[in-house]
Image 1 (cartoon, one colour):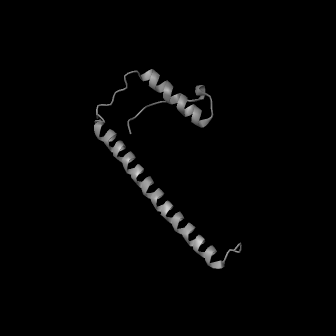
Image 2 (cartoon, rainbow, N blue to C red; image 1 turned 120 degrees about the vertical axis):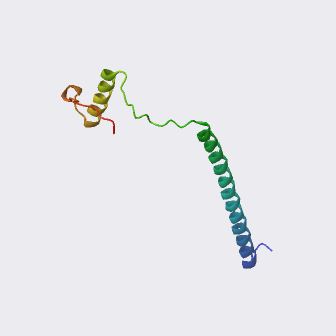
Image 3 (cartoon, rainbow, N blue to C red; image 1 turned 60 degrees about the vertical axis):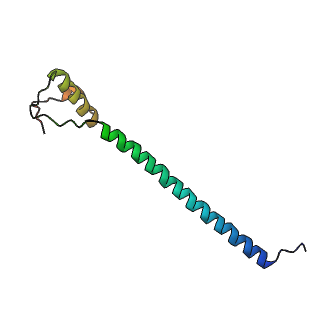
Length: 93
């Protein structure tokens, strides 16, 4: 009676595979359900925010600070010193 038959091994293998497949299906359904809930929350937040359209009357309130910030960003991106950058004009794109 201590010998395990081939039929028993086959049956146990099939049962384990079926249980694994059922577990994967349940896990995937749980992930889809969680993703739908997250998307619903994101859509609610996005719909609650007001859309601000750009104004055609473009004016920089503090021009010197704006130019300094743009110069610093360009210098950092180029890996150079800020004193080597000269901005001659600013246009809205």
